[in-house]
Length: 139
Image (cartoon, rainbow, N blue to C red; front, side, top):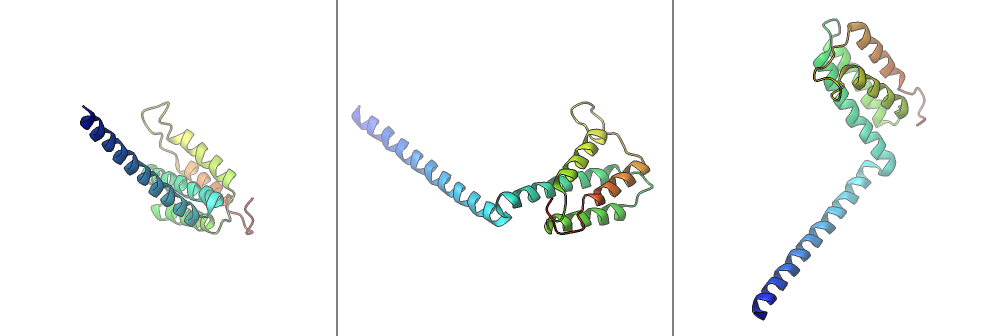
């Protein structure tokens, strides 16, 4: 009976050692990624970039016929450049993206998406450009 207990005990030790090594490697990889994106400040801008990507896909997929795809892509390219150079008002950007999501893609309340009108998309793109700061300030 003690032989079986020793085998089980050894198995548990190996599994725990394996999990500990995986945990250490994961923490190390996370630290490296965190450092590469620029720490807490970089993380905020990276998250903003991901939110903008999702909204751009929604707008391109639901844009009215009066708005050219290139117009939308050019406007969002300006926003990506502003995010990369850290010259964008993040609070205003998040508020604008949230309002667009609530108005035209609210999955919690309706199963279908509302298609925006041409004037609504033009207004959104103008407001999006308004979130870009003219100077290099963060806020």
